[in-house]
Image: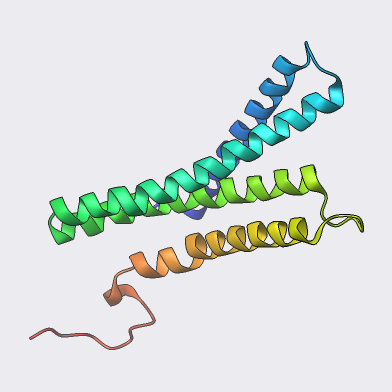
Length: 162
């Protein structure tokens, strides 16, 4: 069973809601001891770090650790079925976390200002490109990879195996 676009959208919305609630909770906890501007900045820094680390961890775990374990220990058809369930969820989480990390970085550094260092502009461009590639991977390449050749309009000819 594959998740529909509405289910992916709900999952991404839930993840972003959790990130902003965590950032808000962090801001509320920090407001007792620091001024309002510093509190917001600290919460956004925490959200950026949380999202960036989660994105990195998801990819390292799913591909390097989980992928190798599945390859070495499962029959080919089971590995393919399991990857068809695990990878889309990992890609959705990665896309949401990368986009949130890019938004937090943009809010913190404001690289579009004239006085911003060029390195910050490049870093935001890289984060935005990564978010775009993550979304392309999730919405374009993953569905094409997981569909069966018999049901695909890309393969109009019936393939027979000898």
